[in-house]
Amino acid sequence: MTYLLALDQGTSSSRSIVFDPSGRTVAMAQKELTQIYPQPGWVEHDALEIWRIQLATAREALAKAGITAAQVTAVGITNQRETTVVWSRLTGQPIHHAIVWQDRRAEPTCVELRARGLADTIRDKTGLLVDAYFSGTKLKWILDQVPGARAQAASGELAFGTIDSWLIWQLTEGRVHVTDVSNASRTMLFNVHTNLWDEDLLAALDIPASLMPTVQPSASLFGEVAPALLGHAIPIGGVAGDQQSALFGQACFKAGMVKNTYGTGCFMLMHTGHNFQTSENGLITTSAAQTTAKPEFALEGSVFVGGAVVQWLRDGLHAIQGSGEVQSLAQSVPDSGGVIVVPAFTGLGAPYWKPDARGSITGLTRGSTLAHIARAALESIAFQSAALLQAMSRDAVRAGGAQVSELRVDGGACVNDLLMQFQADLLGIPVVRPAVTETTALGAAYLAGLTTGVYGSTSELTDLWKAERRFLPTLAPARARELMDRWEHAVQQTTL
Ligand SMILES: Nc1ncnc2c1ncn2[C@@H]1O[C@H](COP(=O)(O)OP(=O)(O)O)[C@@H](O)[C@H]1O
Ligand SMILES: O=P(O)(O)OC[C@H](O)CO
Image (tube, rainbow, N blue to C red; front, side):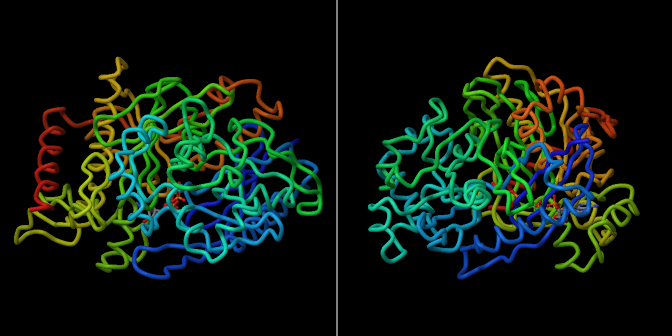
């Protein structure tokens, strides 16, 4: 039997998973990553630690699986996106901590870009809104702020990469400097129509092209893991940003197919095929994982506080001891009793875009209990996701497509049956949980398997995808609309 090894480098941890060719998880290893908060609004990671723990988990996963690297056909890589690393090609040392996607320090550059009237150009070329979230302005910050960086860059010494590039550089012992289209599309420097770095955008941010990695389709040969690292050379055959990788792992290959990942936040992506479709509802357009050189796209929206609201119930309100207890507490009452929690702890993302909104609990009566609040908190994850999906559906219909007909789900909070049922009830469409919910890592393994001939085509992957449970809507549409209206009303109040 041969295997596929997925390296999944996330914001809070690094994981490595060994899959068999049927997509079954054989072994998994995980290590937490240190979060560095140098000042309010700033978030950093130590890129060397990222590499160290990623390698350690890869070794551990192989050992747990009881296999050697020689039995691994290919490695796939998936990663937290936008997080920015700059390192010296000579020493292999980063010149600064990695600046994490959540970091807001580059906002002044974004204000400047908007003032220079570049927002429309950026939107047209990259599909993105001008925001400090994306890598380009973080990269400019490093070049401007690290002493000597501009001179090093001018002499061609420096390399930029998102986490995938950084890991590949390390895995190939400094031989290969590459990325894939889905990661490149998160930099605000990449033309998603031509699949090339955009000279005008590089110039606008004063970034020398010599820093940039070569961009390849997500399923292609990126290099070979150096034999000394895992005991045998292994081709790196797949790379994708974690959300696009999850879309791929969910076998959402066709226009109109949607997945939502319920993690700390929620990330919803809808494949739009080869169409560069823009949103009128505050969503961004991004490159989907691509198996050929021909561009493929997705619409994306995110909920800032998803599963995090359950962490707040645990750590803030002490309503529960562990996240798993939220379901039984919420189920101890028949409904939220009219209570609505809007967890706008850090503002609200798409489709609302209310950065100044703050959280609220409304509808309290003398009879309200902690159980009602827990139920309302859980429901808030579904309300926010429903608003996002409805926005996406409107965009799809405007572009001549069909309404979304089913939602595929994954991520840590999708284990919650009550939440999934409420999601289906609000949306009026089936919510489908797959048998393998490690879809992010699975997507990277699938990409690597396609490149190395383990799979012949994506239709084989469509056949491998299996539902574990379908949650069918049970609520009358009029009642669902009424609930959504009450939610929207509560959202309006968060900025009053
Ligand atoms: N049974 C549950 N019900 C609801 N939320 C849960 C449950 N178990 C875990 N979660 C939430 O899922 C999130 C973790 O999911 P995960 O996919 O590991 O997130 P991330 O990748 O963002 O770290 C946490 O915010 C946690 O509160
Ligand atoms: O590491 P995650 O799962 O929180 O995902 C981070 C996203 O890729 C950020 O865009």
